[in-house]
Image (tube, rainbow, N blue to C red; front, side):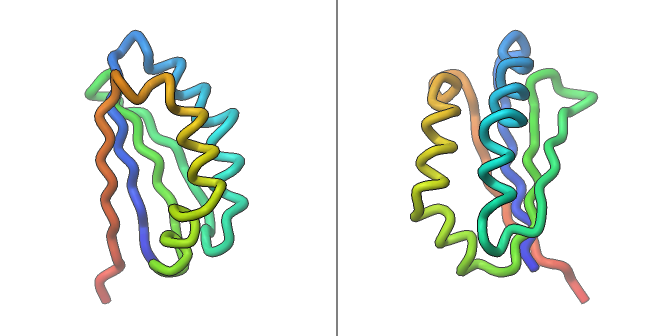
Length: 97
């Protein structure tokens, strides 16, 4: 199991737009992807404009399939209006046993 975190920082005045885009357009696509067990969208209480999509994936092959497929391109199309004003970091974590 891989926990994938996409950390997006947008100008505070664009945060509501980013939240709406993700919840209405992107999250529904994400949670339909094979190998994706779920997604949560978080808003920082400390840093205005910082948003995090937390996704649970079965393994790396499903993340790779998503990233090379049409669903990823569709999400990029929806978020294009924020591309020039946002900072995006992607981090992947595994559970330590």
